[in-house]
Amino acid sequence: MKILTIIGARPQFVKEAIIQNEISKYNDIKEIVVHTGQHYDNNMSGIFFDVLNMKKPEYNLGIKASKHGEMTGKMLIMLEDIMIKETPDIVLLYGDTNSTLAGAIAASKLKIKIAHVEAGLRQEPKDMPEETNRVLTDRISDYLFTPSELGIENLKREGITNNVYFTGDVMYDVFLKMKPKFDYSLLSILNLEKDKYIMMTMHRDFNVDFPEKLEKILKGVNKISNEMKVVLPLHPRTKKRIKEFGLEQEIQNVKIIEPIDYLKLMGLTENCFKVITDSGGYQKEAYFAGKQAVIIMPDTSWRELTDSGLNKLTNEENIYNHIVNIEKKDYVKDIYGNGKAAENIISILKKS
Ligand code: UD1
Image: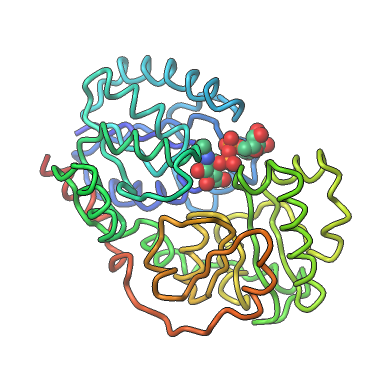
C-alpha cells in the first residue's frame, strides 16, 4: 500500500511523527511525505523533524504562508501534480490547516481515497479558517479518524456515519512516547521554579489580528505577570502583529522567547502552574501534562476538557480573573484514548 501524507504546519509535524513511526513497522506500506512549506522557520518546522526523529519529507513545496486563498491554491496545483506522479492508494491528512484542505481537494478530484486524522472536531466561530478547513475535509474524506467520542457524534449530526472510527488522539500517543525525552533545560536557563510560572501560547487570527483585542489580552497577561512569571514562546504571526500595532510596551513583564521545539515545550509545561493558550493542540497537551488551562477562545473543539471543568474558556477581558479563580479539578483519565491511536489508524488502513 502506498500512502501519501501531507503536512505543513507545526502541529502536523508532531502528529505525523507517531504515524510515521507506526508505518515503519510494516514492510508492505510505503509512505511518501509532502511538506507544503506553510511553516518554514527552523523553529516552526525543521527543529521538529530533528527532535521527533522524523524522516526528511520526499517533497518540500516551499509554499510559505501567505493569504489563505493564494496559499491553498498554490498547494492544490502542486499537490495534484505530485499525486498524479505518485499514484498513492491513500492520501493521509491531519487536522484543520490550509495544507489539509488543499490535500483533500486535490485527492478528491483525482478520486484518491482520503484518510483524515482528527476528524469530527467542531467549534465556533464557524468562519474561522480552521473550521472551514476541517468541515470541508471531513465532507470528502473516505476514512474519518476521530480523537474523541464527541467527534463521532458531531459527524453523525452532519449525516456522516460511514467509515468513522474513534481511534483516540495521536497527540496523546506522541506525548506518552516522548515523555522520557522531554527537555527541562529551559527551567534553569530562564530561571523558573516548579509550579511558579505560567506557560502561554497565542496565535489565532481572531485574537491577534485586531489591535484593541490584542491590547486587552496583553494587558491581562501583563497583570498576571506582576504576580507570577509568564513564559510566552512567541508565534511569528503574533510577533508581527505586536510590532505592527506598537504593543511591545504592553508585555514588558512577560518572558518572551522564540518558538521552541516539542520536547522543550513539554518540559516547561510539565513543571508550570497553569497554561494560557488559544491553540487547539496545546490546550490538550496541557491536560496530558496534568495542567489546567485557560483558553482565549469563544469555543473549543476539545469540549470534554471544558465540560469537566479542567479547562476554562475566556474572552479578552477576563484572562486575569480566570487564571486566579479557576477551580481546581481532579484529573480525568484517558479522555482521548489509551495511547494507541496510531496503531488503530494504521491497522484500519491496512484492512482497506
Ligand atoms: C496555522 C493553522 C492553524 C494551526 C497553526 C499552528 C491554518 C489556517 N491555520 O495557523 O490551524 O493551529 O498553524 O501554528 O492553516 N509564519 C512565519 N514563519 C513560519 C510560519 C508562519 O513567519 O514558520 C507567519 C506566516 O508568514 C504568516 C503567519 O505566521 O504571516 C501565520 O501563518 P499561517 O500558517 O498562515 O497560520 P498560523 O496562524 O500559523
